[in-house]
Image (cartoon, rainbow, N blue to C red; front, side, top):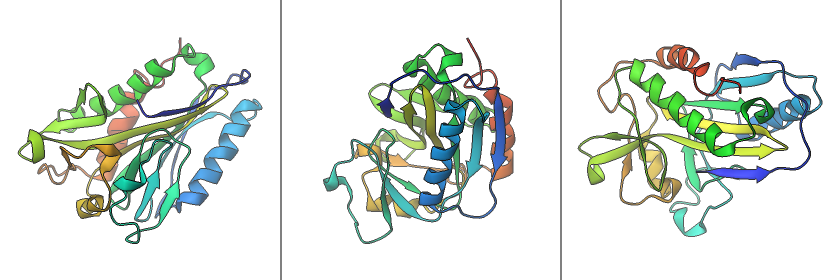
Length: 226
């Protein structure tokens, strides 16, 4: 479970989820600033919870458990420290990022259940597109069976941060990114298995198809309140 915790005093309850989709490529520092501002608004009781769909320009991020030895090509792309849990990952065009700013006061203050909800959200959305996503014990993210290294490959990553029971960061699903860029890191610290995408699996699903599936699967998974 890729989680960075900042659990202190209680947050003010939110008012339900808004959805935003950003066109183009959002620079990573700008995205972090916008998430920080939204979390502050939720904590102050003046902003709704948010699901933010976007893409980043090509870059690597280093989570709180990142091992410098796993950055194999340090000069290949910009590298940004990230307060999320986890290790190194790649973001770039063709990868759907979904940043979720959720108030866990409304979801039982259960971090593990929240992360499992993110995983289930991905699995259900992929299922609507004809792809069977699966969890793997001891490994982060969502995996699919296939002919690649180790007989399976990673199609989605999960990494979150929590501040006073309000979450940010979230998930990344490979639709049609340049998978070669993952060669510059050990993705999420896993050497034995590769990465894949909806396109590499032979699917014809677009980013818009995935976005629609994510919306349909949300309320029964991450969006459910206790």
